[in-house]
Image 1 (tube, rainbow, N blue to C red):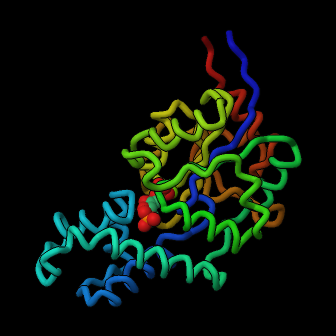
Image 2 (tube, helix red, strand yellow):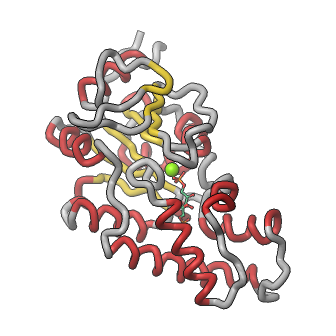
Length: 260
Ligand code: XBP
Ligand code: MG
């Protein structure tokens, strides 16, 4: 039997570290559509359907090809997507710079505790790298960028989540095996990706992902919890804890340690 020590935590960003989709990305997409005179408005419900596809450029193409169709779109829409997406990123990062989106309960607490205990940190996300740095900067401060050893994001890998590539990339960059890490995710596409890379995964759900299939998750929670705001367990074993701290992570890691 092989016993491994927990060395690192790998965080998804959108939906996991912060509730960015509904009030962040969606708003920024709509602002970009307005800017380019595109007759689309992604409301909260439609955006939930569009989240089936990860990646903003991929999502816009999916909307044109499968959901709303290409009526009233510029003829060169496909070629315009990268430019439109760059505008969306500008709107999104501007929104974050105004402090529009806070981190979710327990995220700062857990990051601080993990760093104090010598755990290594990384990010594995589908979103554009600038979006990650903007979120970290405007919620945790400029120094926070140094806390994350690897920020694996966006087009750095050709296949986005649900493929495991982005997690594989982060693991390789840290020279760690999946058994030495835990992943934090919020969505079906996210857990498919982390599991494809062999990672034990904790889930914190949000309004868009509450009813997703999280088969195989180590635990499914409503959030990471704070001393005055205990989490609710939706599935899995919380080992008697009511917030996610390093002690609970060690217990979850031990429970799911690979035997070989
Ligand atoms: C996040 C995404 C991203 C964001 C938008 O998924 O799918 O596409 O919605 O960001 P996950 P970009 O949390 O699973 O990584 O527009 O920069 O792609
Ligand atoms: Mg996510």
